[in-house]
Length: 241
Image 1 (cartoon, rainbow, N blue to C red):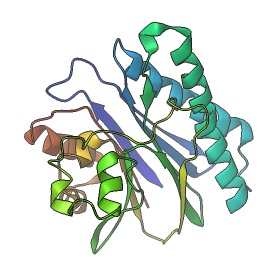
Image 2: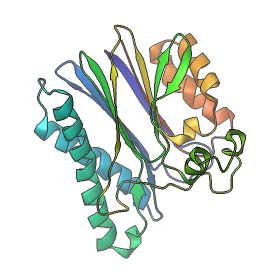
Image 3: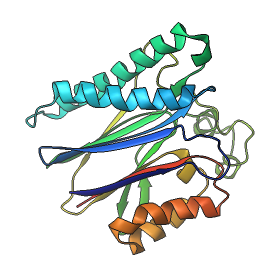
Image 4: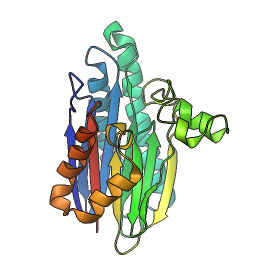
């Protein structure tokens, strides 16, 4: 497997509250993208803690022989470990009030692609037909959409489009979504924060990923988001075989 990752502050923000990390585990790959929230650098700290705690817990419990149940438990406990530390940190200092982060993680072994997520950072699967969103956004507008209260074309203009219904570190206990896909011989996975997916269409992202070499795709996708105004931090990881 090959992978690239990148993060960019964008054109409008004073700090980058996103974070990304991709590591190799005995030939398998774990990638995590976080998009922090909170003032006074609290969002940046939340995403940093989430990445650190996720990888620490995953590393402690990792075995290359994990089955699906074991992998699900390990990924879920890793995101829960991050949640506990951020939740506690937020309550120890008033400056950290409201701190939290999204988290989307993908672990890929020889058979399956596993994904967990909280928030609106996304995981996509790419094939010759296009880009397919694996995760479901934990946002107020997505909830309204699923309830049939708004139309799809209202999502990007709704005044509460950035309101999350779930985030890491906000509640004492969290329940992430979990997905498993059979791994094909050739595959491409994209993880990204909403600085990319919130301003660029799936078709635009797909066209760049389809036509750009792996070592250039991070810059090309960031440039695409910047061309749309760069109103948020932009972060991504691409894993492919």
